[in-house]
Image (cartoon, rainbow, N blue to C red; front, side, top):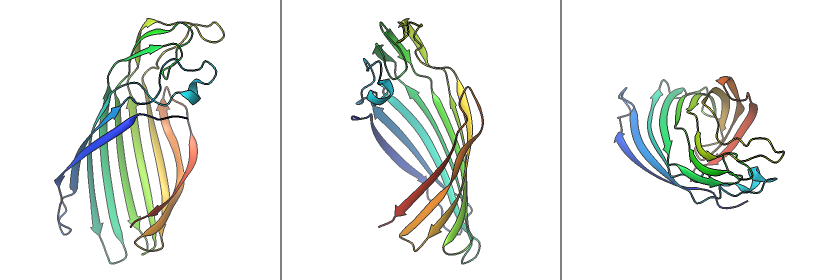
Length: 211
């Protein structure tokens, strides 16, 4: 446990369309993440537990587009499109670190940029029940390392960073709203296809309160 990296985000509403218009709302934003978490000289046996950050100044640019279309009093269709691009400053690492490493590792990590695209839609069946679907694509370029690689806990050459990877995920869900202030949403979240990444399947649920 420990303090992680600190993100700060600023957004600008570029367009706020009228309800009767087919034009969407458009918002752009920029987020800067400061490397306040621990990322280097980690415990050889607890690397995944003691590392709380990436050690890089991370800049993410994003744009969000959404529109709510009222079809009838009870049936509303809402779509959303979010695109973000993140790039990262080089990181000096020693020993076991958030990117891998081992005994004697010393050098510079160049994290690869990350692009994320999310397309989502929501349709209300009744005043209380809605169906939702999120489709996401994440593309991460390879992380490069220059320096002395070092050795792992078993004497093998240490690995620092990882290669290019991409993943397509799908998250259908059902949402139930008791009223305009409280509701719950739940459904599966799983990978549909990917490259250089592991398949996964999980169930996600959230309770939200609007005050």
